[in-house]
Length: 315
Image (cartoon, rainbow, N blue to C red; front, side, top):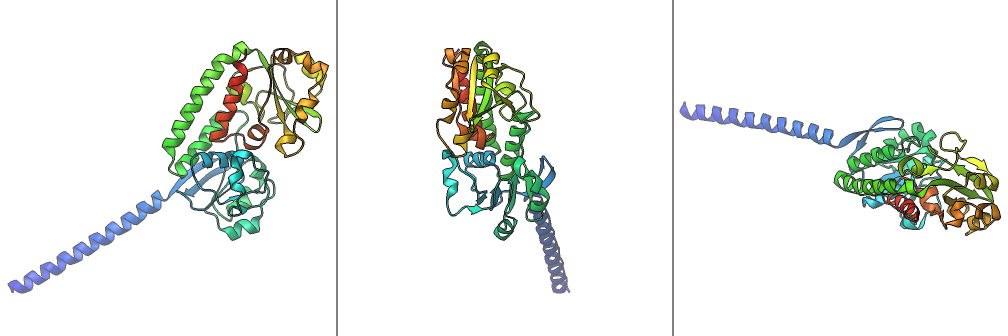
């Protein structure tokens, strides 16, 4: 009887241990599943995204710049003229996923990405891309560029487990921004001009290049009439009348891989030379790729702030 009781107790104990083991396995599985995704709020809603996705496609060069800064591999980018800082992504190993405005849905679907990242130019394709893989829209708001940049970068930090690296880099940028903003008032007014095919366009506060005014505190030389992030077509007379203390120039032709030095030739006239900016050697030819193509990326924002800091330091 004793032997039988012992056998019964052993069997019962084994069964309990088996049940406990199964229960732990189910719990661990649920936890792994829960920990395997992160909910990201973006410009077009909220999306559950896998943590550390293996295959990432991005249509935004600012995001590409950030992922490069965080040492996160990218598997697909659109067909675009890559700036010098990102030429490594021109490798044949990187999937061509279409253009900024026209994604190659067939190629993207065949590539089976784990995550697709889009922004303004590709925003209209969000619904279609979402059918292929989790898709997030990390567009930067012209009305609050730094806030939306920080939010987008924080999201990338969450997805790829790079929160500490993101926090450190953002803190360094914030320090530079504060220092530049403190110096900017002494530099007087500024005017942002883009040249393209001999034409001139001015950009002001709240524009795609509004970082100069909105974040770094350079006073506007003129009230630029434009909607949203778009600029205003202007003339040389406009520049002369505005008489900026600093002139910030972006050469779109160079950004698009066309004629070099076009901006200097376009602005080489008496009306521009008569401005305080020209007289005091404060015409800054900003890096076209940095400002026009890349925009808000972790490495690139740091470089953009440095460019403006150098300009205002001349005052």
